[in-house]
Length: 304
Image (cartoon, rainbow, N blue to C red; front, top):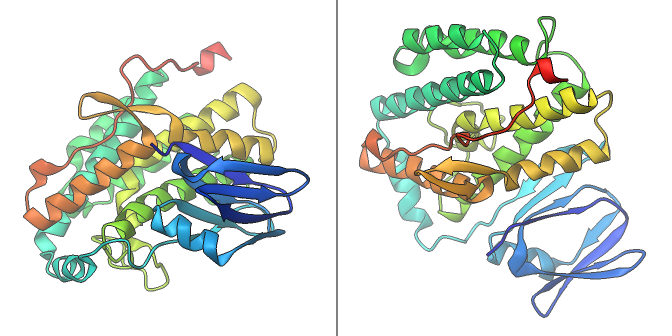
């Protein structure tokens, strides 16, 4: 079972050897490929063999490359992991617009629910406002309840003056965590033979991952919680290597899915499959979502 997130943060040469990832840096390390869920190449001073890249794709291991500032800038996706990718593409092109709008409405609804749930866990009064936005949500979110709720939600978490448009350690953490979610969703979609460029709501011609951008929306609050913990426990003055590595653990946190506890990286796979099933079968009842554990322990602002 793959579960490890491996980060390469220093100069190294990566290769494969008898089922192992071999890291040749200051020392030589070997990691079983069967244990790796995601490989993050954080340093630009890393070289990888073509044999290793092919093996990573064959095993459907997520690979994320970072830029010179160590922020995720690209990911590697397999072109041929699914034997029926042509059939999947034909199904994807046949998705009806009204069904896509219905599914998108549900994704927004659950995103707002999880944002509200997090505010409730933190004992923040703004949770009531998100309940109101949930009641006002209309088909395809034509009145933009999602955007209005975001202003209240992020202000409640990080202070009234906080906005997503500023260059700050908080936003750096959020963007880093969201990139991890996007990569996880796209890895599953590509492995199943779906074209990530064709979304159900996102339709940006410059975005190669529109479909993943759709599916990651209800997952964002799990990253928000991780950044919140960093902010209120350590004040998050900077967002450097230590903070990035702490955020990588968001994929290994436990969540509730289908009334059972799962690690988030495994729950994401099942959740994404449920969305694809609901679109293909035109049945919203097939949707299943991740949620916070009922016994989640979080320090509130009053505790710090």
